[in-house]
Image 1 (cartoon, rainbow, N blue to C red):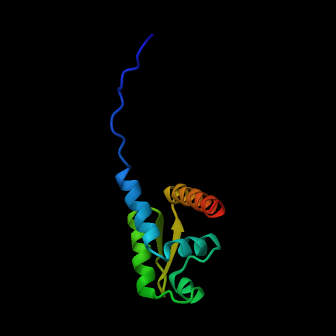
Image 2: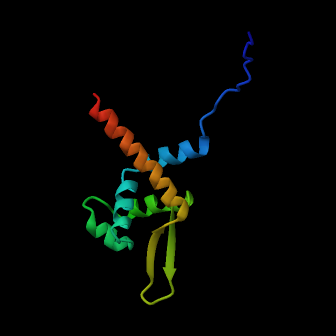
Length: 113
């Protein structure tokens, strides 16, 4: 009878991906911003007006984090007055699918308690 050799190495968590998920979920406004973008609201002023409690300062911090992770892209138009819009990147769409799966998992956990 053959014996199986143990050739497995220790599995480590994906540090950058885990940090990204933690940072985005840690920002209580990121998921709301994704919802706004999904509904065609992509200008910062309009975002602030649409959500009670969201300030320009907090919105800008949240948007900056999402841009650093390449989830969102900032599009500046050379117009007077200046116009800025935000859009989800291709990577951001992949990342949002992961967040959707986490929501599905949470719903299953909530349903089984």
